[in-house]
Amino acid sequence: MPLGSTTRAAAADGNETPEKMCANVFGVLKSLFGKPFDGGKRMDHGVPQQQHPAEQQQHPAMMRLYEVHKEVASLGPQVCNFSGLQAERDYKRLERELTALLLAVDQVDTEGRAELQGARKRAAQEVEGLLRYLEENATHPSRGAIEELSDEARRLVDERVVAPQRSGGAPEINDELVEALQVMVLKLTQVKTEGRVPLRKARYRALTRLCAVQAVVEGRTPQQTLSLPLPGDTHRAVHRINQVMAKVSVARGHLVALLMGLSGRDSCAHLNRLLTEMQAELDAMDVSGNAAIRNYRKQVVEEINGLLKHLDLEGEGEDTRRYDLGQNESIREIEAVRAHVSHLRDGVLRHCVAGDLSFRPKAELQGLLTHLDQVDTAKNPCIREARRRAVVEVQAIITFLDLREALTRRQPGPAELPAHRAVWLVLGSLSDLQAQALAFNGRRVDKSYILLEELLTKQLLALDAVDPQGDDNTKMARKQAVKFAQNILNYLDMRTDGWEY
Figure 1 (cartoon, rainbow, N blue to C red):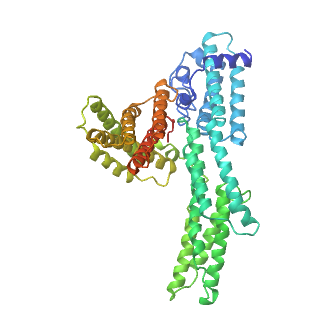
Figure 2 (cartoon, helix red, strand yellow):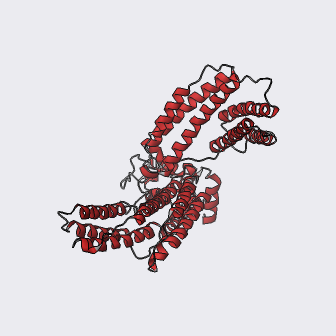
Figure 3 (cartoon, rainbow, N blue to C red):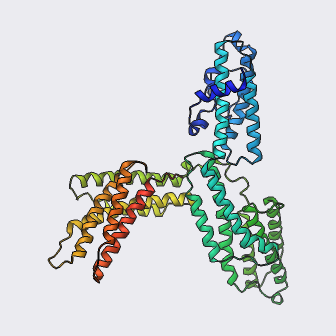
């Protein structure tokens, strides 16, 4: 059978989604060899455990397919963990090896036997699936977004930090740079990965490097206002400490260049060796009897330690516990809180529909906010974002209960201004719409979402049409109502944006 026909047949039957590919890679081997594909963790280099009829077991076609199986078993985990782009060397290697395996499968002579033809077809489907999974992750729009944000960060850091230092000038490190880096961290955090391991890994690696650069830059900013280094005539060791401090300043620029991929020659190991040598030089200095100089040396040592902790990023992202946050203890805490919040939200809405306002778990919700505030994010932007979203979910229920209570207790007097009454009417409508937003569990393309968004927009237009006529209370009430409506829209947007950690 020619290669094209095998490929077309494989594509016709290979309907499994990419999300299931890692979990189902070469699952057909259960029928071929009596055991499922195990991600390459367990390789049986001997005879398969389940015995087949002697003729089929010794048939050259089946033996060749088994050899292909062993090669795919080693490539499968590599494909499922590859988080790079098509231009990278590892991508080209994996693509080349998988294509070779597909050719090898196509060249298997089945002698027209149905069972061998079926085995060959299923083997071709699995290799095709790995090729498709590899390509889809490398060309996924989210992978492109990660790379674009990384390139933008590299250009900024190169322009403000690396290039000036290379030319002998001073890096432009200020609050503006720190804020720009923080904006990029937030944008990276918002990139959707659709639960794909390679995309999660790529996002995590980009975030760890950018956060490390941010920490280095933020650590440098306050030191520009210090009076150190001390003058050299204070003590004979001060001149040597000053020299080390100058080297540390240069090493900081090299570290930033390394983290952002802007250093073609240096390596993390080389910079680690230089910083360790600086530490040894400082430890060998005799600064006994002078507390000020001891503190000065201590400050420089702490500066070196601060740089060293960022030099272990070359293997960052290889441990799935780091980028697959489903295994993270803090995320599990947040998810437990969200499950509790969901239960309380359902209870609140159920009682509101029945007209019963006695169910007010506000104290319990406040306790959940306190719990979330104590969750350790480990400076991970994705965990921080997950916690922020959980906080928003809790606050949405609290504001809903507060508005319902305010509407119930409201007792308008005869002297109430028409504009003020109009604002309260809008707030009543917003309370009903927020109940729908809290209960909404669909997608943005759903008609109910589009209708809800339109109704909220109409309430904003109604508030815009209210004329306070100079009344300060009406102005304040309208301002709060506008903010309330915008918060509902933001909540609805957050519930449907498809973000995941």
